[in-house]
Amino acid sequence: MLLKRELYKGVSMDPNEALIQKFYQSFQDKNLHAMLECYDENVEFFDPVFLHLKGKEVFAMWSMLIERGTDLKVSYQNIRANEQGGSAEWTASYTFTKTNRLIKNRIKANFKIRNEKIVWHKDSFSLWKWAGMALGVSGYLLGFTSFIQDQIKNEAQTGLKLYMKRKKIQ
Image (tube, rainbow, N blue to C red; front, side, top):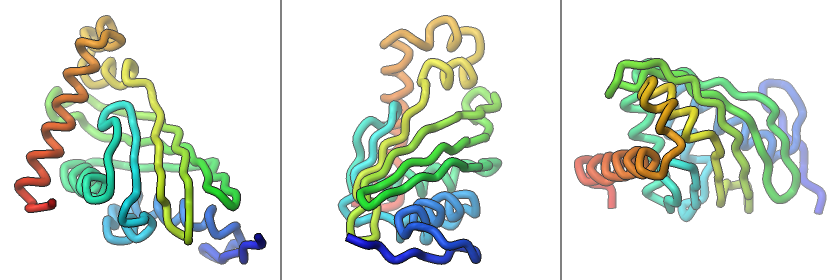
């Protein structure tokens, strides 16, 4: 199947590459609406913290992260794509408000794309490194343990559920 090449900011690129580019540029601009336009309504998302989210949970997660990340800065590079999907590397820099510590999380993303929409998105990063940045010495020393990692996951997932309840997202 031949995919027509798209123009993104005057540069010709694969349509799936253009979709991933749009997603991260929108994230960088904190344009939630444009980000979510890139997703299929039944998208599945995976990462080390939120584990497995679907559809509206994914939308709510990005909404929550953008809303709470007042100093969030996103950069991205190495976007690659083919007919089935693509990949990218991105960095999120922000203050973890619970400890007031600076986070610079480097993430590798993989995507499956169908009908010009992202249907599957997996972010990979070291939760141990993240724990070290977020929690300091205790995170560096204990961040590899399932006890600490489970606490981080539970807090994030509980926070997302409360956010969805407060915003009446079902």
